[in-house]
Amino acid sequence: METLTKAWLHATGEAGAPRSVERMREHRRQYGTSGNCFDLAFWLMDEFRNAGIDCYPVGKKLGTSGAHAAVVAIGSDGRRYFCDLGDQWLQPILIEPGSDDYTEEPLAGFFPGARIAVSSDGKRAQIRYIRHNGKESRAEFDLEPADETEFQDAAAYAQNLLKKPLVECRVRMCTGQIVHWEYESGHSQISSDRGLFSESEPLADETWAQRISRRSGIDEAVVQTALELYETRGL
Image (cartoon, rainbow, N blue to C red; front, side):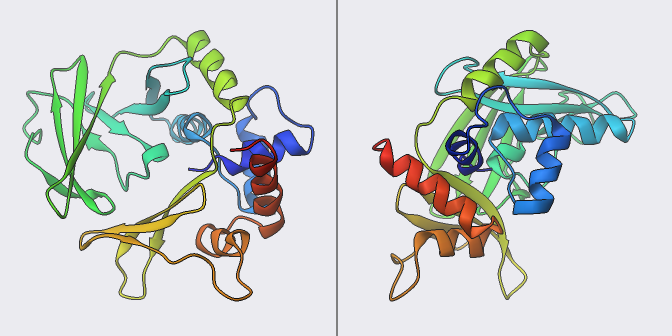
């Protein structure tokens, strides 16, 4: 998940309505970009539906600067699974209370650098992110399908809102472990099951654009253009 692509689109005069999934795929092939949480939700739903899997969008604080989008997929047995690519989840998690496999115990393997505990009553789900040092953060989602028009409008609002440069991605280390790497406004860090580690600022000839490109796979020129736009706007 990243907010560089929309800044790049603003800089190249393509800002406006959210991109089609086909356009996202094209940009991915050409420049290694992905998109914000709404982009990823639309993309994931398209992949699910092409595979014959029922799904629908969910969100919180839609239409605001604090909005977040995710997807609920419905298995062949009718059970629902929460999918959040925007937060870099590794796999969907069961949110159907009463199911034999449903648990509210902390689980590993769903989020890089943290265990996940889900508490669902079928209508809402509270998610706890439990870090290596015991610190917790929480998120809550309405599990009812978001209104399609409202979701599209919220996506358009997010596409035209520039807040800060942010890149989150999963990185496979030389040990084979998958960690969560994040860049935000001139600072980068790695989150793993060993804890949270800040990276040093770029040294010698390295630039932030080069590091972000190396970590994320996004074309360096795209990254540089986006960072320059954020800087120009004081973000």
